[in-house]
Image (cartoon, rainbow, N blue to C red; front, side, top):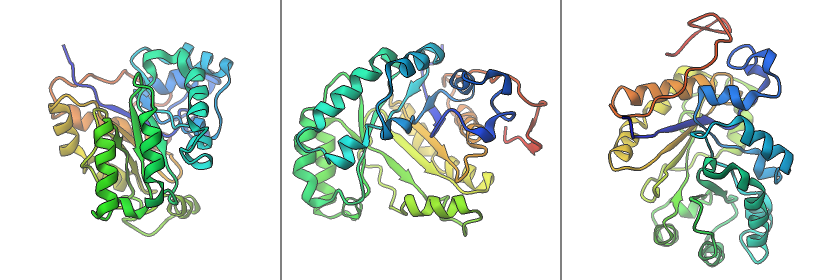
Length: 293
């Protein structure tokens, strides 16, 4: 029986351009259930902006299958406004209570810290991490350049996270910057997604990789498959990696995520298969474009 699990997904599960490509126009309001046939995880970026209402979480719980995982971002009130200072734990606890009905479908909770969260904030991060509940898996996304230069601050952050059993989220923007931007969305993506070095020394038991792709699907797929050796190695030692794919307009992200999973399945015999998507377009055709798998 397959036992290795690779989670793949996108930043969201509902996106207007996906209707007629990956989502059926007839299933409005049940996009999560359909998306979960394409991918087995999602970043769930909406929680960064607001804690969801109980009715919203109940709807998610009703649509998401038991083997699906949400890799929610903690609210920005915790990471960007309180900056992990006093009061942040209470806000985080409120968020965790809100999503509790999802149970085991809650994957690694992401603490995405702002680019200004630098060396002077290390003590605050240390104090905050000590108080995190141990019944969740945590990952931290760092963006200040001092955490990427191999210097004392970089080493101190890695030691702190490693001691807490917390991995660093990888923001891999190499595909995004591989060619000049071809759309306004690509220009905006470059504004919000910095070109940071890829650091994989401290990844935890559930490594999280966010591949920020290009307008071109093939360039994005090349960026994804560049992770194949690393992902296979993680699976070989029992880790449970998450790989999320972004594109500036996210036109083909679900298809790209599945293509990467299929690539890994060709190398890992015991990889748990993804479910079969519901048909929403002619076989082998996605909105008039050639399929990637």
